[in-house]
Image (tube, rainbow, N blue to C red; front, side):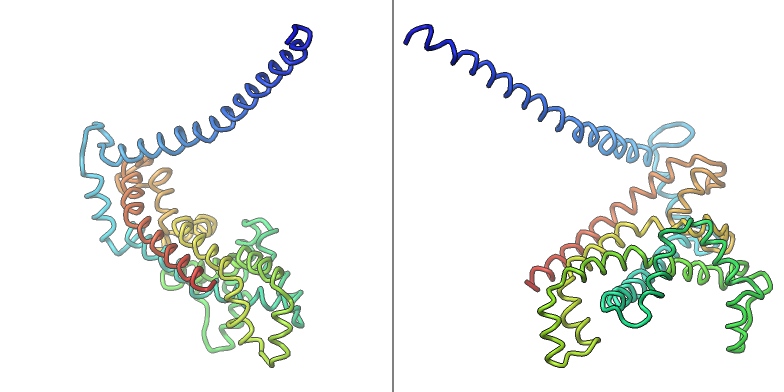
Length: 315
């Protein structure tokens, strides 16, 4: 083959090599970002957190005293201990699973079917998502204050709100915050369920209607099984977010009445009056996180496996 015949081939080969090098560089950069993110913000941070759990806050020596402090506070059933925080956190979780999840499903179905009055309910339950949390807390506080609308309703049933309000008494403070938590916690679930219902095959629902299927049977026998993957997602979100329920307490400022949760307890250890006195109790907080992770991860993984097994059985 002559040199003239090879001349157009050589530039093409160089061009291909250049393109291949560019692809390799691009792939390397794209892979480097998540790898560095994992090394710095996951591996390094978690290793340091585990190490802090076994270090003394004053001497930086190896110790198990953080675990002793954690256990003593966990077994203290009064005040703002981690034991009370865990109890309240489990109450929030029970509210999520037993009240918010079923009601969100019913409300989403109510809106999806455009039953009379659905626009009013859509506004009521979408408001918390578009209005500032501070405004919502202020409005809710006025609602449950003495001489407020809730006071008149309770009077009608023969009761009364305590002089300092529901948030001002140990016996009612947690219930009052849970009420706010229920009201403002519907939005995400309702949006997810509404989106899932909007993608349901209309032919199935119309066939069920022709067969005389009522609303209750339709939602339990048809709608619920068809949107089960979305229900599974909501349950997993609820499980993984169990330790994040602390915002309402911080906004209401009612933690003096044994309303603290684990997330708020951690906040107090780091920036408030911690169990070791002062702020910045990173060692105790790291120990707490390690203990809950060791116990919680297997539970969450088991529940997730059971949910996925049920989903595969459905199909």
